[in-house]
Every structure is written in structure tokens, then in C-alpha cells.
Length: 412
Image 1 (cartoon, rainbow, N blue to C red):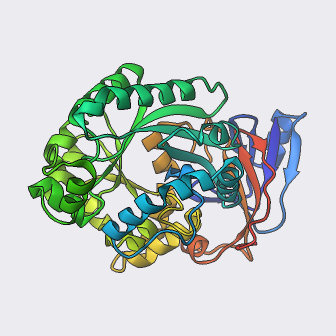
Image 2 (image 1 turned 90 degrees about the vertical axis):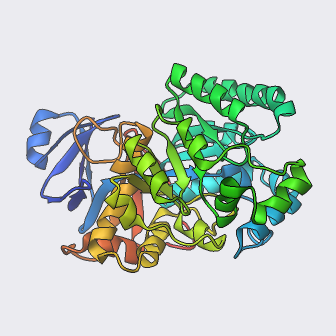
């Protein structure tokens, strides 16, 4: 048992002071320090410096670790140009990201206070790095393939990767499933995967309505995707439309990433079936896809969370940076209210979406916590200041263990 005594605690629903936290793997009690010492007389006492803030560890629900080698190889500004640059540089990017490269990406997230991440794994090359990561990991094995003649081979490869991830037996590692997108996965494969997901109660995610090219292709088998599909896949029509794709997920709440180009009917479907939207603002901007209207998601009562996507469409894996960019992209939203929603989106909301016992400083929750060193006593606008100013992260606890972090040269 340990007792940690910060100056302040963000739960994240309220700011507490003059209380401490007793924890081992989970949080046992939040109370004044003296009361906790009496109840747990043999606990190790951790007294933090003045103006220290204890808050929940951050959750990055969508990241592509395998593509962490990119820095200047890919083309930004337009989704189709970016896609062609990915294909052109795919071998370089994949072969260029060895275990050291992936470990560096994982360590950079840790230094930024990310205690849980959702890894979208296309090839399974990141399995060992994720299995050895200090963070909690939801390991989404991705299913992709639109050609019916290859369906059995593609599904066999997917199952092999999923089985490999199931062999990882360590605390905080969760095998899961990702369906790449409505335009890239054959409906037969989707049906088989979702049946298995339901039978085994696995977590599920998919990309949906990221670009205008996707919108036009699914609506009319036309637009910028048409030349791409004809040239690369000898396919001249979409396999299904957006409505047919979403119907696969009607009985399985799913994390749907991007959703920038979804229409009102699709948003109503997302709300009705309890899906979650993963918002990746930097990726959306770099690929020329515009900004999602978060207020419209709120109007439809759709849960949304913020994530970084991968380094193939981002310049760092830093949720504080991601939230700050979202703050400015949502130019009409009330500033402090949005800051509070963004912080909840990467803590308690993300934990609920992933169905894991973390995301808040509360009794019974896993002790996934970070310590920030503030300059002074926080004001009522603390949540806004946390996004605007890069405070030093001086401590990280995952499942109650104090994890040593290396200073991030960009932010220390």
C-alpha cells in the first residue's frame, strides 16, 4: 500500500485539495493524509512538491505504432495524395520501423502522460513492443481486404495475428479487433469478424467517413477513389454503402475513428446504437479532411474521445498537444467548457468506451495516475491552462506501479 499526497487532485470531475490517495494496484481511499495513515499504518508515504497536481493517466485510444518511422516521407494536405505516398513508401516505412523505433514511440507517449493506448496493428509487427510496453494496451488486430477471391487467405492471416495477441498474458493487455474501413473490407469478412467479436466479447473499432473521397465512393462509386480502386484493385464499384456498413455494428457498440464526413442519418445511427467517435484533429487537418463538429456530436448525444492517430499522419504522439489543437479547431465552442470535455475525453470517457477500469481518480479504479508540476495554485480555469501550457510530468503510475520516464526533449 502507498499513500500519495499531492497539493491538488483532478478527479477529473472536480478539483480536490487537502486530501491524499491510498492505493496499490487500485485506488482504495481518498481522504486527508492523517486519516489514511491511521487506516494504513504500514503504507509507503509519497509527499509531492508544492503545487503538484495528481490526475488520471491519459488514454490514447487510436495509434498506429507500426508506422512510427515516418517524419518527412509522406505527403500532406490532401487525403488521396497522402494515400498514394503511403503506398509508394510503404516498404520503407514498414522496414524502417524496427523494435527500437516502436519502443521510442511508446516511450514518447509515456513521457506525455499516456498510461493506456489502443494500438491499431495491421501486420502484427508491433505485438512484441506492445506486449512489453509499460502501459495498458488494447491491441486492435486490423482486418483489411476488399477482394472476395482473397477473403479466406486474408481472414486466416487476421486470425493468426489475433491468436498471437491472445497468447500475451500480462496485466493490462487486451486483444481486440479493428475493421479497417467500409471501402477496404469485404462485407463477408466483416460479418465473420463481428460474429467472433460478439462470441468472445472483444473490443471493436473501425475507421469511418474520414475523407470526401470515401463519402463519394460509398455514395456513388465515384470521386477521387474511383481511379485508385480501378488501378490497384480492378474494382469499379463500392462493396457497400455507408448505411450497409454501419448495420453490421448495430448490436455491437464500436469505436469509430474520424467520422468527419458523416451525414445526419449516420450520426443518428451512431447515437442509437451507442457507438463512440474517436476524434483525431491533427490527422484530419494534415490529410485535408477538415474538422468534425463536436457540438453536433453532443447534440446527437454521441460520446466522443480524442486520440492522436499514428505518426503517418501526425508529428508527435502527445494528447496534450492534440487537445490543444482541437481547442483551436473548434473555434465557436465555449473555451473552458470544451477544455473540460477534451480532458474527460482522454480519461474517463475513453476508459468507458474501451470498457477498462481506469480514467479517473476514484475509489475502486485502477491506479493509473500522472503527476504534473504546476507553477502556482490553480484557478477555476485549470483545465484550460492544462491544455495551453506544457507542464512538466514528474510522475507516472500504471496499475499502482511507479514507472520511470525519460524526459521528452521537446517539452521538458
